[in-house]
Length: 411
Image (cartoon, rainbow, N blue to C red):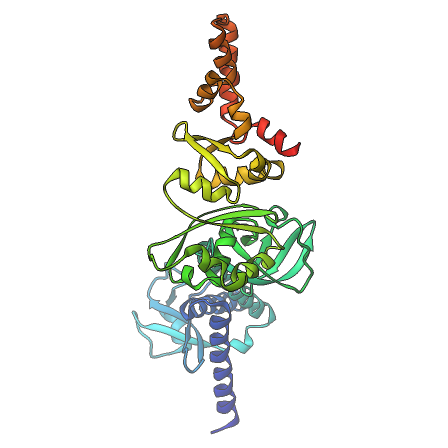
């Protein structure tokens, strides 16, 4: 075997290895890479030849052999100069050709020149990037809500750029836990919140503040949730401060709350540390609203739960536990309202018992205390004032936690 043949074999093996490396690194199909390379070689050959002529390329994937050649049909009258050649011109190259034959001429890739090679390279790079972009967008779009781990690459104006390996993700400031401080190079976990297809490529948005992030952490730490023995019904969060998670199970032998807490609290404590000491309340879910409210506000003692309608309930709590049940700046009652999906009017038992019978009835029926007081006096407000009062009442009913309750909590 001469030196030229050995060099050709070595070059072919290098090309085959390169093709395999690209498909493995970029996670795209070999067919796409091969087709892109063919198109690139054809573009480079046409630049080299200058004149319009039909160029084709052939690639042996296993051996890495590449052939680039021109193919034209011999005709008597040329109608398509790119794909046809006259008999006289063809016989200058091969005297044995006749009408209808094909003239095939091999092209030496090494003679294409720097410009043609650069053109071919640009075509391959562009095609591979486009394919990689489409695949990344499709892959991450199917993974919304999934937990990912990456490395902090850059922090810019509060936003954090995270390297996920195949692509970069953005952790916006609004999706961070406020008390956390991250450094470049540290490992960070978050939940895929959204994927946007921008001009520069797919942008993956991740979050540490969404309820799904807390749910995914419980799936990792609690085997019973992972194997679906225990099911997460709902998660609500005030990121970095407090969260509530409702769990249930179809297996009577399993305590869902105990499974989430773990031996000596080791499971839930691991999650608390991940969330910068965010307080987590774990509740055993039940469809019975009265029992669920008592569990959600535990250890506060609930005296009475009254369902006004499908959207609102009135909760009477022991006077000494009122501030604890409402929470700092109304945080606890807001989370409870979101967890049970009801608006909550909360009163201390002393305060509620101190109201008149008509006022208590008005509260339990979802009417304002003012209208009850006016009814007890036997007086009727003018039509315009009554309309104004009704408008004021409707505004109050739209607020999940009344300003009266928040004010008491602050006091």
